[in-house]
Length: 494
Image (cartoon, rainbow, N blue to C red; front, top):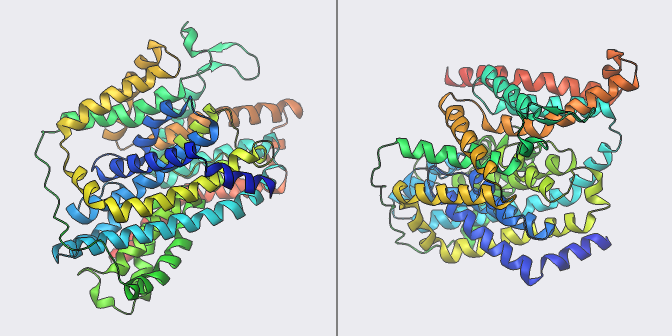
């Protein structure tokens, strides 16, 4: 309780409040720009947060994450072009409201529902995270090996339309994770005589290359066209009390859906938002409005995808298993700050963790304020041309890669991974699986080798213990999930 109270007080310090406000505004801008993503925004911010105190850095990263998730609704509503993939469901009803001259009402609904989903997911962070962290105390080397396998199969299986492509992505990441010093023997592996690679691939440069520089290449190859101008917000960004009362049950229901979707790694904001939208339609007393412009539809989608932000942080902080590309990058930011996921975050580093949790709630409050007061101005950024974005992202990528170690080798590695990331997107592979494998690969390798050393090479030691078998079964289910999901989709279509 002392750590919780300290965290709340510390989060209200001027430095942390400024970090929350600026990062949320940045996130809204990133999310509102079609073609950019929350993952790219967080990757670019990591070098800037490197010199900050750990709690301030985490609040800033959370601000960009939450702001981008909400910002995606702006272009979805005004342009029918989701700024982020998780805003696709919002576009269905939001754009119809815009065509009716009710863009302000749609934006207000998205803002309020996003706040409800994001803020209430903070409660899940406070309540569920410590319990899961306690469970991780029972993990031995074998459990950590299967945990890494579980994390890899989740991302590889669910986040890609093709299970094979997802597994290829994970395998590529595992190969890359072997670069550096052998964790058990201390000898160099695959460094090709480059001393900068002795500690492994520079994580920040790799992230920026995969998520940011690759996007520059994707944008640059397209024919530069004038962006469609967003529809004007002619009405007030405002909801009446009766309208707030109408969307409240939907928002609360979708918040629960989003938290669960976030805790289940691989489900993510897109799946959560569509489930939230479908459930809003199922329970609505005004089903005839759906497809023609329903504020309940907007609320259902937005509350769910913003609740995913808090839910997805729970397995990331407690088990080190991020559920999507953004939390994979956030996990990298955590490690850069010298913080290791698990029970230590709630004991040794409890003050930092609970400052982050309180800051997460504050971030969502700022999102509500900026959304209601400044959404008219943020709407203008959705028409920014690619010819402006490309040089800005390129410059930030180069500066960010160089800044952490002041090393040009990191910049060249960033360019190499920018090219790799470009082909990853072209071949519909999964950049998130590659990043996750970079993080989980050493954990799994160390767990495997320690287990075998401790048991004189007896491989059956990997299959002992209840937690081990639970993780094995979960890994099998996650591998089969794409097949199950595709069958359900075919039945729904038929």
